[in-house]
Image (cartoon, rainbow, N blue to C red):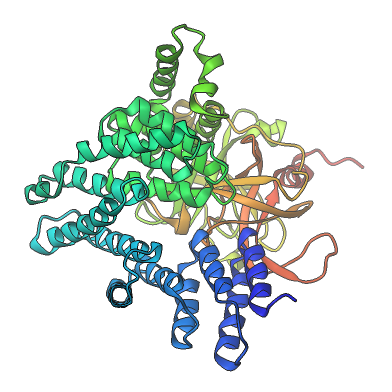
Length: 570
């Protein structure tokens, strides 16, 4: 007979895999209420699995609530308490999280459990806590910051030395932090170990595992970091590609590696290490279900400007390995399944950012997103003129929309050129937010001429004339989250349903970007993002509501525009 806790586990797993955060929150809330109000006997391992599922989708706030309920009602074990502490740390509650871990460490020491996997996990999370505290100081050299760094390294090294064959994850974190200390000239840390010697040792252990076919995804990621420490970036790329080809490498793993590369290794597009590793890592992350990340427009510009150079580096790598020049045919074999094709697919998406606009009252803050379209792609009478397409709740002449008027809006293309501001003149066509929620807006004559020159080398969005088939399809959104000026967000969205003119999808984050372009999996323009709700009405006659984002099909916009612009016939 299935236990109550098992039913909750199955339900929460399903909701998380569908990115239905609202439903998962309700289910967790019901479980927590039941934990407090009943004397039901639960399977503790089911709670552990629920906590792991929540961690995998980075639902740390729910982990904190559930972990707190389990702790206060004495329904925990060492593993659950470790996860509870980790969720506190991820939420920024360092004092509480460290307190839970230190108490746990003391208990396991006194109970003779200090050689168990749970004990080493506790020490690893303590290492992570102090690592994050050091990063929060801005890599400061203050006495407090250095103490954080020392503690983190000591925890990681202690676990690694207990069994260097097994605890490679702890070892590579020590390597990364020792290398960071050297970069920031924190000299007192050097006495804790030689990171290059440590990296060689860890890499040798993993190569042995790979030869025996016992290496998992984390081993590949760790080996890539070892090569990074040894400044062998070509080998780092090979291990990274091997990592991304592992069956157990999903968006959670790749996002964790991306954070490690950005925060600890401080990779950037200004150096070869970042140029060769970061685009492939981002590409593989976005390809995964639930993959997402945010990028500074400057980094996107650098990626685009370096695309030919990076491709050449990949091809040269293959020539070195194969000994002959037919590099493209061998590249995928060297980098793992589909890696080079994935990189090219991702760069096509990066190029789509060039036409994405931030719309606001001034240059300091955005009210929404929009994007450039060539007039004749929507209606032949509009010719070669460039227009801005956005939501009518972002730009409108209708006072009921409470939107910006065309005359007061400032438009900035932060990837194309962040230093230029563009003005609008009039709305050519608009549909209210209660219908298609779209406005097609003309630029001033002077600014349209500037845009024509500025965009002469970009590829205009091809328009799809078919809606995605099947719920396993993905759609992609590029926009300015929360109207921000500094970052563009790439999101892989889970398609829920569609019924012309509406498309429903669920994003891995809660951030909305009104007026963003929606693309299909081949980066063709599918629609215009306009709304999100936890109570969205289901489509196609299905009863009920669900948590979803909603977009407007581009062909529905074209059809409505044509009704206005086509000559009327009797």
